Amino acid sequence: MNIVVCIKQVPDTWSEKKLDPADNTLDRVATDPVLNEMDEYAVEEALRLKEAHGGEVTVLCMGPETAADTIRKALSMGADKAIHVLDDGLHGTDGVGTSLALAKALGTTEFDLVLLGSESSDARMSVVPAMLAERLECPQLTFAKEVVVDGSTVRIKRVTDEGFQTVEGELPAVVSVVEKLNEPRYPSFKGIMAAKKKPVATLSLDDLGLAAGEVGLAGAWSAVESFELAPARSAGTVVTDEGNGAVALADFLAARKFI
Amino acid sequence: MAEVLVLVDHVDGEVKKVTLELLTLARRVGEPGAVLVAEGLDAAAVDAAAVRLGEFGAARVYVVSGAELTSHLVAPVAEALAQIVGQVAPMAVLVAANEDGKEVAGRLAIKIGSGIITDATDVSVHGDGLAAEQPVFGGSTVVRSQVTHGTPIIAIRPNSTAPEAAPGAGEQVPVSVVVSAAARGARITERVVEEKGERPELSEAAIVVSGGRGVGSGENFSVIEALADSLGAAVGASRAATDAGWYPHQHQVGQTGKTVSPQLYVAAGISGAIQHRAGMQTSKTIVAINKDPEAPIFELVDFGVVGDLHKVVPALTAEVAKRKA
Ligand SMILES: Cc1cc2nc3c(=O)[nH]c(=O)nc-3n(C[C@H](O)[C@H](O)[C@H](O)COP(=O)(O)OP(=O)(O)OC[C@H]3O[C@@H](n4cnc5c(N)ncnc54)[C@H](O)[C@@H]3O)c2cc1C
Ligand SMILES: Nc1ncnc2c1ncn2[C@@H]1O[C@H](COP(=O)(O)O)[C@@H](O)[C@H]1O
Image 1 (cartoon, each protein chain N blue to C red):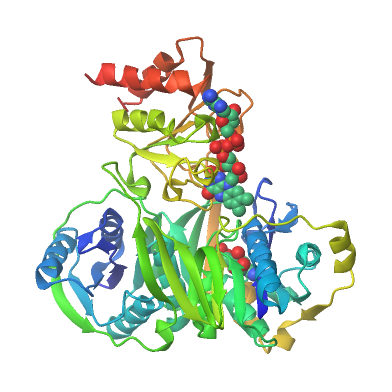
Image 2 (cartoon, chains in turn green, purple):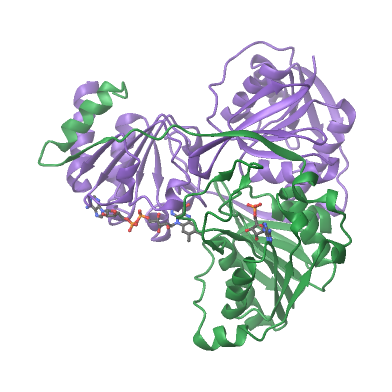
């Protein structure tokens, strides 16, 4: 079974994220880039499925030069090879454009299963997997907390507002995962060494048959007009409980009319 | 007046609060038309839903009938919406920013060639289009965005607006949809609904009381529940608490759980990890109880108590009961 895992490079979750006033896009220079945490779970799941069913795991990442480190991390976890979609024309691409570029890149390879995280920690849209399924005309099985491949059928448990659903479809399929389904492995020393020799194919917009206006900031179908920093929360009061903490808290809640 | 389509969230015909919020927002920028996927509803349930939608301003209610609209994941509803968009050429489409809503929106965007904005908290008229407001980066930045291509598709975060009634005609317009084979790729074979109880729904509640690892066990969550009940609140939990099996996962607040924005958020025994903050940071008032004075949650609070939650929370519950009596 050939699995492609879509991975995104995002700012470290703890770093302070800022927009660049020059063009209202994420200031990626100001932050430490890392592999989107949720995508680590997708990589782990792909490796486990490969261990059970055989085949190859390819990681697919659209991102700037620095995304090479993110790709290296996934390869050192055990993925076999990588596709890096890299082009200056991609700067400022929105979810619609991302799904287009990923779909085109998937067109250059063979796959039975596409795995994604269910959300990137910076954009937090949770739409790329559904958009990709729409474009590829593949079954969409998203927000999986459990993934089982049984012959040519994939079955997931989908996390919902009220509980969960069991959803099934035929391969090839698009599956997005939540962080409940496994515990991602740490790259071993051997894995880190091996990753240095694994093949990474770099694809430009030209290679994907995309014109500059179809993606990137100019091709985006939504635009940030302006932004402002929310007023900083004024520092609150913190008291130490010496038997009166609950009363003090109740006084505060009463003053704010909650009781 | 230009029509704004609102995708209705309902359970067996009972319209959810978030839909009433969407209708309220839609009215500020145009004339709301509600899209009700009515598969499995009888005529009486459809009528009742249409009346309710009318009360909150729906001029028309598109009653979508057809087979296999809800037995398969997301794609059939996106197809139905695309068909209606083609028929009525609305000025915008609003959906609730929950899992299904956002995915329907994403697929619709590709189908009709339109831009999409997710997790908006407000919309307004801007030129001859719409502008949406979105809090991003955990609420530290507020962005004003516009869809620049096609019909704006905007996913609105629940609890962003208070629903206000204002009568609309609620005229029923039947729409029949034939779901394509391609949209029937992912079949839902089982739905498990966890016990909900009497408490308000997490994403809709005005007050949320959440417990984390500090609560210590599943049994101890009764302390959190008691405080929640005294305040009429919903119960939330950190991932540490849901992963430990102390509380069901659909109560998880945070990046991979629910995003809540209540008037009051109470965090007990929660450290305030960035992934937890992502789901509660835009709450109006934040209160925490934690025994560690260095816990990052205290950076966010309006009022914090450094202390043992097993003492402070029950004492607070008693104090609330006393003052409410
Ligand atoms: C991809 C990903 C997604 C995630 N999504 C989420 C998410 O959606 N929601 C979420 O919550 N987390 C999420 N996390 C996990 C997050 O990083 C934290 O691990 C988690 O929030 C910690 O939960 P906690 O605060 O309850 O536990 P801890 O961090 O262990 O904190 C427990 C706190 O309780 C206090 N305490 C202990 N005993 C007492 C007592 N008797 N009285 C008072 N205080 C006490 C301690 O001082 C401590 O501050 C995610 C992580 C990843 C990697
Ligand atoms: N630039 C990208 N390159 C590869 N995968 C991506 C990219 N952007 C998003 N994804 C995938 O889509 C998922 C959901 O992202 P989002 O819709 O932005 O929340 C992520 O977890 C990734 O798996």
